[in-house]
Image (tube, rainbow, N blue to C red; front, top):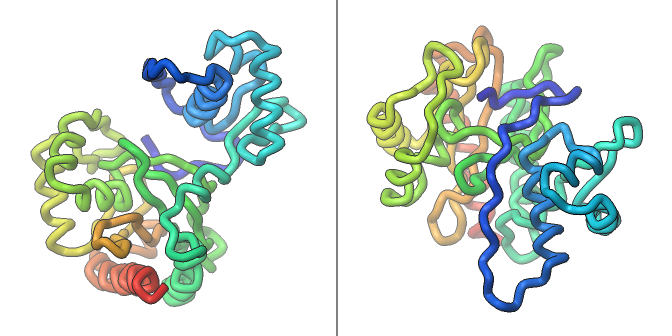
Length: 275
């Protein structure tokens, strides 16, 4: 699975079965349906029509329309007026950011991300883990005519790219070991790690080095280098990384770039303490 997507209609992710709701005796059916709509649309970055949502969830169209209209009015959904497809906005991502005082992670990170972009001239991105995936929160595009660009909200695996491996490596050990057992290590390129033991070794190397690298493991011709952002409690709450074409970010430059990205991540981590 590629971490990078064009912005003109990425393919939908594989549908995941919805978990059975917990029957507490105090459930609110309309809330359940709203959450199921949000979760289902999370599997379809390109969006779904009203008919598509109704069919995917088995809900009546009129019920889906009412709930989707409410979510759209509150800013959680948007609709393409040409295709009539509903899709998630960035609001869910933004309200779930780690916060210090009234400032969110992105607000605390943008100045440092711009400084890193100016120094490297490459695209700088920030993301965090949600369950068994990472999510791009924001980016500062590079200064080259040919540059990496993705949409905020793009999800990525935790094993075949630098930010994903970084987030995996800095999970608590028992949780990390369980996650490695659960991950489906599908091959994206010839360099993708597909052996769980090799992935565990890579996580140990990342923790020791303090940064992770992606040697065209998700996409041919694209390299990235990531470092952890630590919250006030000392846990890795997010990651910041550089993405670039391999000819501008060759393997020989990984150690120097790793130090550069780690310094930026440390400055962002420090901003949590200052706030």
